Figure (cartoon, rainbow, N blue to C red):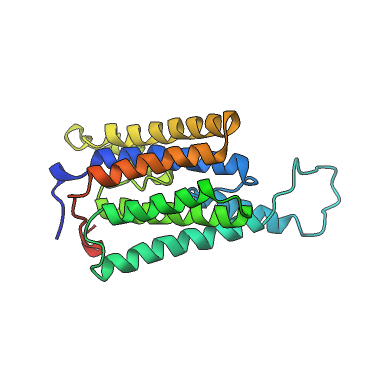
Length: 226
């Protein structure tokens, strides 16, 4: 089972990209400088945190701040767990449509917004939501669009500039994904500073919930076909 290009829910992918930037920036600012969508950044933060426990090299250079390992060690496994669960259910044929994945993501983000509990729990829930979203993006079948990270999108965008003009039809969409991730991050950072992480997450829940309603008829391709 596969989706034809003309029926691909490109709009949903663009909305989810904004959402990822929104949540990532807000959590980073309010939950101790950890990413929940950009797991490449967490790998770097984890490495820095581990390196800071090494003996000093005797130079006068000092780090501007201490990077802990708790945040990355919470976010990375939670992201992987969310992605693995969504992937397993997809392979088992349980999730044939988009809306159940969006619903699960919305519930996790609602938990982040509503729970006053430990930061680690809220970070884990947000990261699991982003892991689910990443699997959705893979199954939407849009080349170069993962929605939760834009490194590959940027690489694909500039790679397409070297192709023949007739094959550059996706360059505009890739550029839009890049731009919307940045816009989402700006909105998330501003919202977290002006209001709170909970307000930003409730807005994200509303966006995902609306997406679930609007795409309830969309059928996802099998993971092998995505």
